[in-house]
Length: 482
Image 1 (cartoon, rainbow, N blue to C red):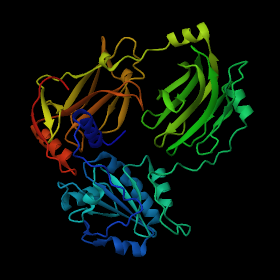
Image 2: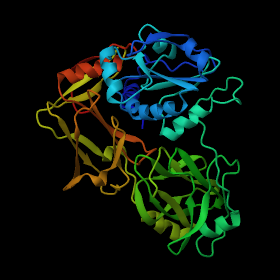
Image 3: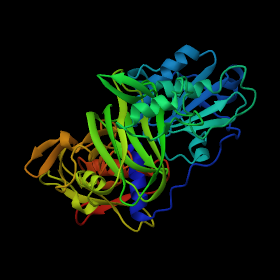
Image 4: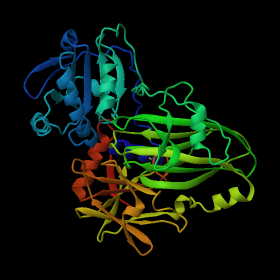
């Protein structure tokens, strides 16, 4: 999930048609402006002097309240400790509230050894048209911005990014719009063996792996007396396993399969695409369970994927089995047995706290304000209601501040509703921000809820929203519910 403030701004843009925030400029491959700062230790740091000694400078523009920044700094520290002879890391806060004293405490509290300071009058936020914390810029040995990345999935992905720019083979600037996927080092299976493992008894469907060998394969295996195909991408990094199926369907046909997985909710998702469009997602843990997808008449390219968003645990797995094409009454019966997917209006997300009031955040030229609950409480009690045909294991609530994703079924069930309790504000943010999705990782955001503890929280939230875009936010009493 995106950083909470970025997600909040994105929500506001959708609501208000506000055009004040500019897109990040295309500076990839361009010389990064030289800068000089004084860090928390009193050392003067100059980009040009660092590049005289190092092959790479990683510049992280951050804020002390930013959870993703705090999460990835240990990865930077560990990597820098092992490669300090070749690379430098400089972390600069662009938040006006981060004084040098505050940054020195932050550095000590998080056991950071690399340089920490302020952007100050360097002009870096303006050059980058900074919109997100963190913004990480990889400046190569030639002084050019070779990679700009907002967040990293894990330390393995960060190290992979660093290694792109180190060594004697790097003889000219190569710029990347994102960190390339890790190199596939698993042998691709024989397609006949793969098809035999995946087909239902008597089935004749033909399966294949990625022809370009960019993604890890599913491998045929015998597990617990069942012949199936299991994802081979490693659990310790962002990566994708994929298998493909091309078939021709008649009107009313359906694609049936069984899927099993054991995945940490926030680190991996099972995705099935039909003709390059997402058709189904699964998260969490489940033994072998049946599912089917409707097909239009014609030829289709179907892709079964395990997408690892970050490092998982050693027992993570995903497997597919008994894939078959259904038709006629058999297809109709299988589709009717699935839980429905209701419209957004059939869901509910509301605040139960007594004594709350609603304020509205406003920005210049906004067509619509952004509502926020002022609670006067340390915690928020959220009421979630689902329509009868919805699956509480598939609907999820995301805490946008922490990135925590929780199936609705895991909250306390009270009659025809679920009740979730969270802090009204984050440990490093003045607000709480929650989104209800109809399906995980790709489902549409149905409803949002923004909370603060008190009036000071509203003022701090307005200040955060105005940093670093320069938009002046105000607030007033709101009418109605968010």
